[in-house]
Image 1 (cartoon, one colour):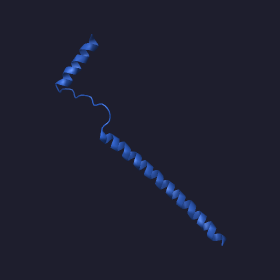
Image 2 (cartoon, rainbow, N blue to C red; image 1 turned 30 degrees about the horizontal axis):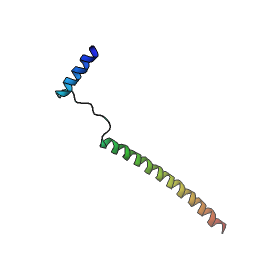
Image 3 (cartoon, one colour; image 1 turned 60 degrees about the vertical axis):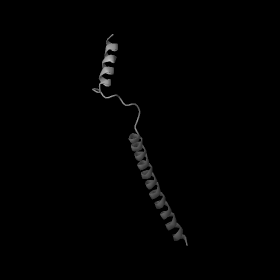
Image 4 (cartoon, helix red, strand yellow; image 1 turned 30 degrees about the vertical axis):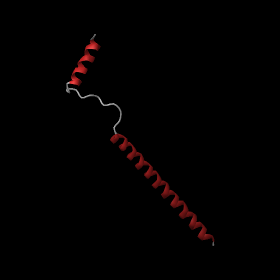
Length: 68
């Protein structure tokens, strides 16, 4: 009985605009934020990988030029 009365109370309050209705799911802004963070992480990883590869090739070029 108590649960039923509580449910009726919340339905009445929500219909009167006193209690805002609960939103379901994520909004477009939340998805955009998640995608933006993922892009930043990927860009950071690519930059770190690129710097490591540049250092490797620089060392290889120095070794090859020392041979001749």
